[in-house]
Image (cartoon, rainbow, N blue to C red; front, side, top):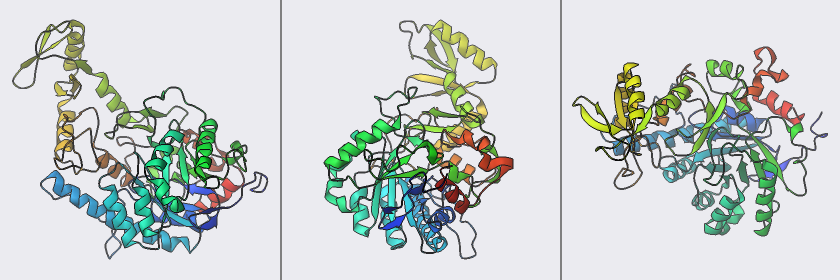
Length: 469
């Protein structure tokens, strides 16, 4: 099957006619200037991550992101400086690698630390090198105004027509000329953080076609009938999407690939990670809600994720005084302070303590979890060393406000997302770190394109995608 036989036609994206194939932007050095530049050089759209991107010194050595500030706010400022320098560097690399072809986009998370400051800093420092900005993880109202200021197109990431309606009415209608497209991200199948709302059941995925059809109908009401929609999440091969291509009902559609670009020669992930991808089975990627952002996310069920699941399972509700069914006393901590559990929960707690989970940590929900002394020390250390990488963090209770806190108790059931994503990005450890992935990753093991562990170049992958496979 050829590109012509599946009806794949070029689209105008960020001011240039390109293939309707888009590299999904993955956080913290997982999509960078090398990978995005290669996608652009192949005539498609490359997307580097603007989330704490790597930067390098004059000798080409990666600058390790070490934090020396004594307070969270001081470390937060250091993090923003790293992020801006890294984003500029990756934009320059992408521009050089693109050979003047395709388009270069930058991906940011609205809920990341200092998103607006990072955007201004990178777009100012890399003028003319970035053609578009994609932005999700929250409601990025101000992305339109910022992009328009620098003359770049913006691409909000949404998971429903309702979300786009809110963005359009509040801000986007004022900057409609710079709206390059809308990314519809399937909240059940996409990797990383997902846009599931409280009204949607994580156990009951909905097909994307009716949801995108509803989005297009809304966009037509706003005069955006020819503005491309990027279908993201669950896209593997295009011969499975022929009813979307050249559909009058859906209008112009591009396809965004987040998972398949991981397994290319230009992909910066470790060899261990690439080998792991080739072994995954269906069901190995799961939706979970352990992220300190509070969002659902999709990740590989590895020892890191299993430990988080088990940590939450060793959890009981308590009261500080006997009340109702909570009449069974349990003494905890070095001072042996009493808490009161149900008799059944005390039996469970005593079994956990006997198994070595002797430390208790209180959660914001009037529960305690039981962990080993080593895990308790790790959790407390990570919370103390927080550098404020999110606008608000459930794990450390950091918030990007005058008080520097959410005002809530830090939640030990979560984790330091900055630490683990930096480690998986810059080491061979993909078992004991968070490994984000889309739910189609199991297909690497069965797709003949990757037989015998074959890893293509980006150009080979783009050519393959154009055949429908």
